[in-house]
Image (cartoon, rainbow, N blue to C red; front, side, top):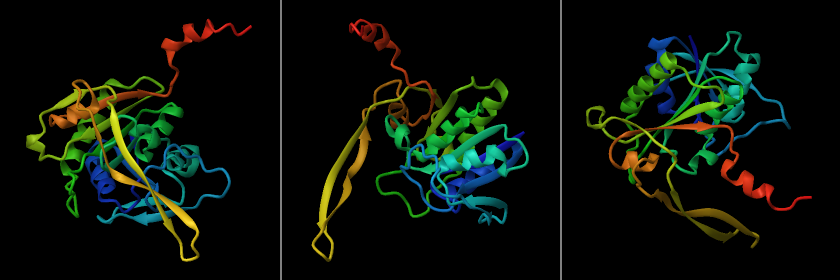
Length: 255
């Protein structure tokens, strides 16, 4: 069993290290991650410039690889042959902050797992919900333990082609986590604001700022599960077709 571990927080992220260490008992683990933070990068494929891959050393002394590409580039590079040994499973994370609701379209963590699904491999994205005032060094150990539990089930039962699992873990001690719930995407509430400033030459520039997003803790959803102290496991698929609209659109008198 060969597991590729990647992330969007960068090769030196403590969440990446915790995930790699937790998965090593399950098989060979290879780390190939971005050399910098790609948070909210979405599903990127780099085509207009060459990509570099360099050997790296994680904080525990174990070897890995870094690249100047995006998280999804990491997966593509590995599967296209940068790694000589075929990959069986891709696990992305552990992200510093939850990825729920519409976050999945922005998240480099989730879209790395989507890249695995595009290649016909099972993908798992793992994120840790952080408190409003997160500690300087968050404890990723409970999330790593829950990630291993999810990956063990994927290896045992399999995952249909074109699907991936989005896993979100509450920021709680392992013994305080109430269990695992299978969920759907919830409603994420974004509170973005436009911040306009002037550079030294009086030319305007902009930041997208605002308060941190919240969500609706509806029962059965990813955000609802986190709110109640459960790990959320949401199955996602590559087919984004709104099937319920197909028949209606066919009646729009296209001819």
